[in-house]
Length: 273
View 1 (cartoon, rainbow, N blue to C red):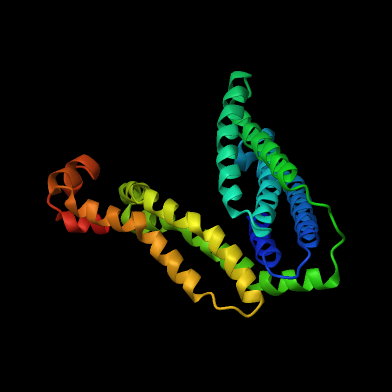
View 2 (cartoon, rainbow, N blue to C red):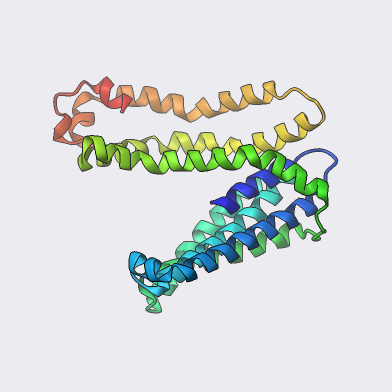
């Protein structure tokens, strides 16, 4: 998660005018290497706790594989987006998903069981990261003091915000379970999945907006028009989904989607959920 956030920070700086993208890439990879080393050392020192908690040594090793491989891919993908290819970021992420499925299936057939799922994930992330590198072929450059200062200037706000946002997203099911019970978590998950098409379509513009607005803002330009256009774009799917949900009959909403528990609930309430 930390490496992913650093990748986003690097993308923001790389997209600015009159910068050296390779220096920010090198610095981000160095930070990622440090995060990986800290993860390895931390898990090794706490192995008496970590192994029983996760169930086996292989799964503890799997944590390192995920941290190392996903961080590498994310940083390379962020670099590619930052230098002006945000659409490629989406395509390579889709490629990673396909390769992950293939690699995990192959690992399971080879008898690796649960560890095979992690190995497949790691292989796909590394292979796709290499593909990203081959598509842009950056030349590593030694970061300067300005590179470090500019990175941390933005990271001091971005990193805490990202962690809080991830915690909030992860805490939702836990909070709902604590106050409303396990069944409510199921309803929340269902509602979240039903809304995913609109959310995913809207989020596709995020990387493009981030890259363009960073470049425009770095030369004192106005980014409000881009923000307005992006907000309009985000409604292309979410608005039809909203009215489409209102068009679904109460009977289908009550029994077909949310089950008999909501048999007497007004359809508008279920749309709101």
